[in-house]
Image (cartoon, rainbow, N blue to C red; front, side, top):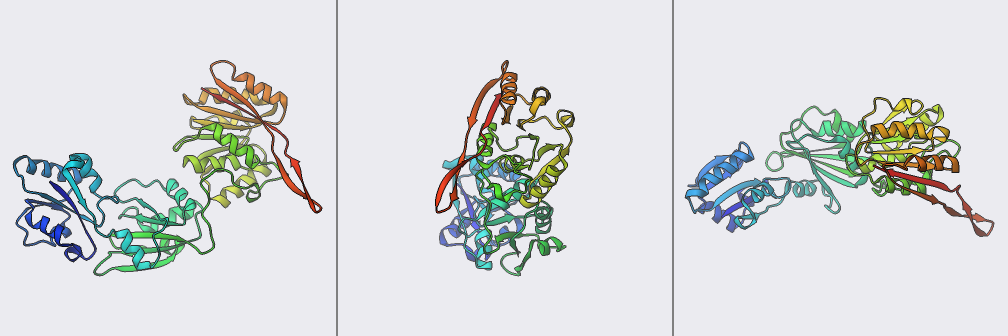
Length: 400
């Protein structure tokens, strides 16, 4: 049997009688050097972790000729970004038992005296960090706990978040939990300016009191956007259009005729990627820049007239076109050449002519649909209320 045993920050003292007995009877101990050093009198063969594949090879070689138990020593909870999941996948659930301990995340939250309710736990330890995805998580959650490493330090993480417009968090760095531990508290900016940290640490981000995380659901209220003269894809039409785009994580998206950038901003929150916002009007471009700042959005603003402005952009998986007028067929022709297989195109039109031209374009080789959406909202009229209608919008979709 292979036992994956979590060891807390107190080392050997954190273990109960059963895991101590397993370690005593084990024929092979696998773990980090600091964990193995906790058991100097153990009679088992000891293998220090170099890589998880080396550890697996040592375990496989041992169990081929020996029936004694194997004890894999890990930090805290082995199934929380630890070696436990790897060992289970490699040797199967029936041959592995996991004995967890208090995790580093639990210890860290105990130190800063914050509850663990609704915390989002992430790791950039020993892996390439996706800071765009991390910033999206920060915007969508009240609390984050992040395992860091010597490359993706708390300072770098906080700096990357600031660059992407994330703010309103209190940051805590819990270094070297256990003997010699150290706690650092401050703003994202303060942590970003710190030059060095202990080699083992956890970064905790707690949203400041009174500030709420942004909802991940589409439909940001119109009044939160900067826009000129009502030039914005209204919230209800925006939600329908986003649904028709069938966006998924990692999609490349174009927003052609981006106007205020509302669709581009919401699309980026869904995909976690840079969205390309194409707009020709300078006043609207100022609105897009302001909204990019407000929402910390990852937008690439392309100033120019489509279809010429589309040249050289990465091939899209999804394209939203907010109108297009008489030039809609030329825009769609350029989009068709660039669109990835299985790509989706959604056009919003307020005139019958534009709607007809777009729907006709998708006649051959496309799965197409047309929806006429009409929305009315209640507004006060004296002591009473009445409905006030938005202009109806044609929503046309083409899918390759």
